[in-house]
Image (cartoon, rainbow, N blue to C red):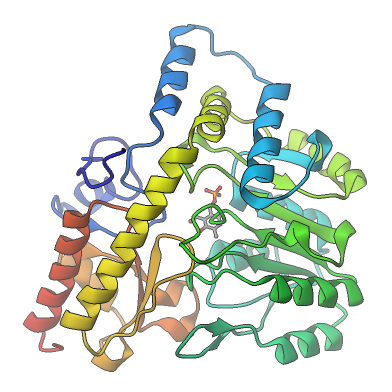
Length: 392
Ligand SMILES: Cc1ncc(COP(=O)(O)O)c(C=O)c1O
């Protein structure tokens, strides 16, 4: 049994999530429920592997070995029923960097990508930064779930031959939706019919809640030769600082080209500890992951009860995957800068919904991958700030 309920003090570790407040704002007691990493300690065997490697005092250039590829192949088969070979894999130092390189390779400057907001900001900011136009097909927000607007999607793609790539996020950050086999097949078919690349960011794909399944785009019945997925052990095992991820595709010819590009640009220059961390996590981490998901699920359910009791006008449904809760605070009629004010005045930080799409400025994304007491303190501070300012 792992103790996910134990508070881990991350201050002083150069943590993006926890270490910015004192440094930048002179605040030393902010509760950080934002950026998507976990406050949990990782798999103990990862620590052992890192310690063992650190003991060897040579830290020269590295290359992946067959054992590393074998761990990825085995993990993907065991967890996602995907059959891949070594040359279907290109190692990357991060998913966002891989998106950058792949958009650059596959979409020309006067061409476009399409995606479905609200969505993880780098998935549109990276193409925009590269001067590729982004076309948006909004998800439909029903009370029960977020639904893909297939009619809109298909029309936009058909009407605009400049669209060359569909960027999917599955499971979807921030809505927490896991797309079904039918939805993935439908997307892949639209991409095949219109000759689009399908780039599927599946980094949250191991963190799926009970009763749901991630159906990888690699299992789609269409468009086999133009599908690429982006995966990593980093969200799954709290290893984001290790900078290791990988792309998968059945298109061996393209992967050969991409491997060469990734080598030339430094995208595949993983550091020594990244290799060790991936190997140990994928080899030894299954039980840790199972218990971690159980704990996250309890936190997600706890949050539902908390909101139903204390924030009765808020809307939130338990996500199908991810440790990210997407909370609609529209009914409180908050000012546009409320997330910043919550940090400065309320000493709690969430991700503002506006980052994922302008229309979602009344939403917050709450990261529940922390011990329950920290989550509760963060939510209590939200309620206290709302009361102090007469919104509650
Ligand atoms: C959907 C999604 N993709 C990619 C990333 C970042 O991946 P990386 O750190 O490998 O660039 C995140 C991190 O929050 C994410 O939520």
